[in-house]
Image (cartoon, rainbow, N blue to C red):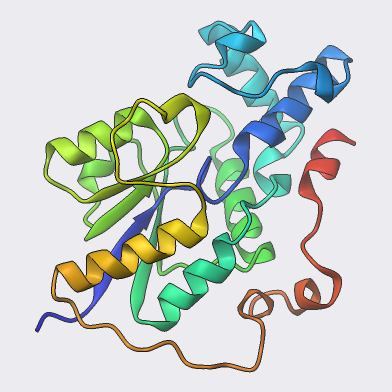
Length: 227
């Protein structure tokens, strides 16, 4: 029986609530109430009146001035599910395309690492890559329709993490991290891999990197992004 299992996990829209964080930045830049900006429905934020150039400029300011990658809200259940999978022997490989323009790489990378630690998200590898098919993993979780299509085109098992802009993508899909965790366990069993039974640890898994989180609860990052 083969041992070990590498899970490739996307960040924005899967682990971090990119849409909420970016909406607060856009609202602040426009001087409007965040509630006046509709929920994201399309991949390119066209419902916010953004063209490509407008998106790139606002996103640049979101990352460099508002430090969005440091203050982004975490998706509910993400850290707990990933810790349980990690405890079972799954190697977590974070794969994100955050260096897609030629600015602010040091800020994007450092804020990403700080965010992962602050939210107690476990990982063995951190890859900043656009072509996710170039990153070896046994299975993937992603929200971007083009990434899902590309991975499936090369025969990779990939779970679509449900978002409004990917509802026309065929399953399998997850409505949240409980679904995603079960899919990974099922995929491990399907491929005949061997993983360990998670230990019954006394401590809350999300407290392992940041003990204060277990005492105070998760920080409300989107308030930082908007304040």
